[in-house]
Every structure is written in structure tokens, then in C-alpha cells.
Amino acid sequence: MTVIRIMVTVSQGKSLRPLVKRISVEDCEEREESGSSALLPQPFDFQPKEDSPLKLRFASLAIVLLALVAIPALAQNDIYDNGPTNGTTDGWTINFGFAVSDSFSVGPNTSVSGLNFAAWVEPGDTLQSAEVSITSSEFGGTSFFDQTVSFTQSGCVSNQYGFNVCTESSTFSGPTLNAGTYWLTLSNASTAAGDPVYWDENSGPSLASENSIGTVPSESFTLTGNGSTTPPPTTPEPSSILLLGSGLLGVAGVLRRKLF
Image 1 (tube, rainbow, N blue to C red):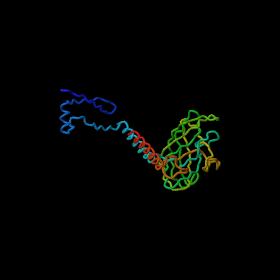
Image 2 (cartoon, rainbow, N blue to C red):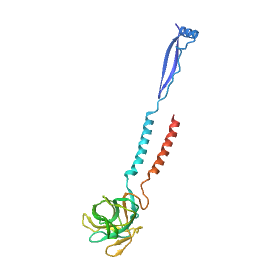
Image 3 (cartoon, one colour):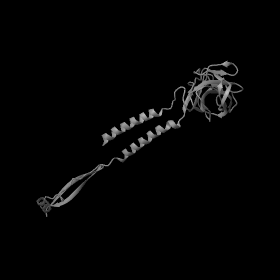
Image 4 (tube, rainbow, N blue to C red):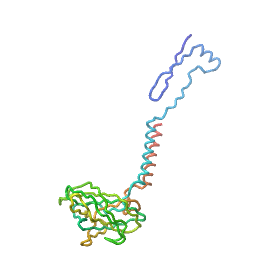
């Protein structure tokens, strides 16, 4: 019996291997006479599988997009920003009986839950707490919030007068305010060494007053919370993130078409 060896190459992923079928000459002649091709090599229908790492990349992209949409709902906005730290001009005492009050404006239904401000402190000293008040007018009027809150000190830089100019940060359960203008007052500050604390003057857009002399240039501070903002929020809006997400998905679709 004469045997014909027919080599059929089959692609399986990245590997290749020969497939051998043994067919006798007599079988071939019989099948030719009957018109059957059952013993002849049949086409191998190979469907390449999707690359599993690519699937993982698409899944990771979807998770990232969902996280981007969720972050704005959890993040806090800067509901009022009176400008950056100056640190080189002047500072106003907020302990030993002195107090400083700065105005700020918010939109409707705005919740206040945090405060960042710049303070001048003696080298090596640390602000521990201060009394924070939110009222309808400077040093008085209707009181919406009045508590002693703890602060975390960071980012200290020495200035030309020998003070450390530091960022003081605090979070607290503050009031929910209607649209309008209010006053933030800092007083009764306490440090680890008992030294004076000075609120950094930056001449921002707020009005300001010191309790012993009256009108002064305003100070650097940022109020955080949720609600309408003045100026606009620093957290990206959900619509902007969705636009970015749709663009990324479009790019992913193009890459998918090119790969397959």
C-alpha cells in the first residue's frame, strides 16, 4: 500500500505545529470514483482567540472611567478662595486678645466643612488650634458657627523676617449657608510654645478688619465644602469627565479595530 503524507499547518495562538494525516492511494481512488471527499484533508476552521491581556486592559479602562465619574461626588470644592499666600508683607495677630475678620461670599445651599490659611509662626513652633467663627458681619451679627478647631501644619517656608510661613489646615462640621456674604473670624490661636500667631496678609478680594484698629488688607485663606462656589470650583465637573471618558473609549475602539 502506498501512503501519501500530507502536512497541514495549524496556527494555535503564537505556536505552530504540523498535523499529519495518513491516506492510502487505494482509498483516494475509491473516493474519487464515488465522488466522496471524506478522507481528503478538510479545511481547518481556526478562529483566533482574543488576547486575554487586551481584555484586561479594556476592563481596567472601564474601571478608571467609573472612578473618575465618582470622584467629584466625593471630593470637596474650594467654596471660597481669597488668593495665594504672600508670606513677605505682613501678618496680623490672632491670639492674646487680637482677632481678624475677613469677608467671603457663597452661592445657595453651601456647606462649609474646612479651612486652610497661611500663618506666620516662630521657628520650631506649631499652631495647635484656633477659634473659628462665621457670622453675618465683622466680629458679630448672626452667628452661624463658632468653635475651637484643631489644625494641621505643613509646607513651612522661612521668610526674610525670620518667621516660618506655614499652611494651616482643618476640617470640621460647619454650617450650611444661603447665598450671600459672610465674615470669617480667627482668634484665640494656641501654639505648642505659646508664641504669637500671625494671619498672613495677601490683599485678596475680601474685606477685612482687625478688632483693635479697624479696616486692614485681607488675608490668605480658602474655605472648603460643598455647594456653589466663588470663584468657580477647582474640582472637574462630571460633564467634563464624561467627555474625557467618551474620548478615551473612542480611542480604545480604534485600537481594537486595528488589532482585530
